[in-house]
Image (cartoon, protein in one colour):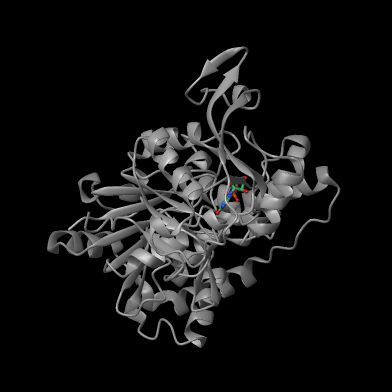
Length: 436
Ligand code: IMP
């Protein structure tokens, strides 16, 4: 009865939502364990598109439970909007389908202002955050001054906690706004308390001790699917620091961010595009700043699901994938957006780097060195057939099959799923991680 973690093997946006939606059929419970509404998980079912930012990507399946774990940072306004939008389409008819950890930390308006103003103050060295207040909310969490979901449900406590936090946050916002020569945003204590109290009341029916709930499921052998957000190279410890997000995106955090022991995890599936993308600043060795990069962006519709920002595009980098395999303990890979590469005369895979004249097979430890490496490519023949109708590996053109097999050889783990279009059905499942 394996419990599976799905993580991004690159810089996010790999198509985790689609794979989680697909695998939910085989699981009972789907858990988000980190990140917040910086994520944008896109699902297309029967031609209808759903973009989820906080609610796990299993929510379109009836009879399954979706859990927002303690490791997530929640903007309750965004969450409530997401709940309302799903309900208006007939999903989430039963409130028991969604559980929210009482220990999850809450994003307040000052976190969003601090995120935006700190980015402004960094000028040339800005990270390119999503501006959703994620970093400042996690800072408050580890600084032991955060406000949690449980606090929203107690009016007296909420009032006290907002009062304690708003003063110091407003002071920093004032300083930053003055330095940036922008008007200071208005943060009215009474309004915030009222709004968040109301949101707390609306969310109350979903709030639970999710660690206890999940541990009971583990004890009974119920299948759990853990849904990662962002990607390995955006992990605060293992990513291209400081150009990373503020949480651990690697598989090990699935246990911490859900309140379970690491022994509850059986398998880890890494999701990778057939090429590479990145949003925001930071090193990206295989980036294509030419017509080809533009073509990948256009054909792959590479614009952020959260911010709409154009994504930087480049060739597949297996140095990155081997690294992701190592730090996540990947069992297999799901290869998404294979269809986007159709129509190219040849395709390239980066197999190693050159740094100061030396060939290196591993990521250099220092991100500044990663900014200087030169990718070493292997070139393979391309294919021009549309792939959307392919349902088995043999349906793919021979060159596309060779591309998949070469990735397996270079990474040392199997490709168990190939996605050939955005729709749930446009997928080739080579091995089901729940059965294999
Ligand atoms: P933050 O998470 O908003 O603080 O942004 C930090 C970095 O992570 C920026 O480079 C963002 O573009 C990137 N990032 C955050 N969430 C995602 C995501 O879901 N997909 C891709 N990039 C992301």
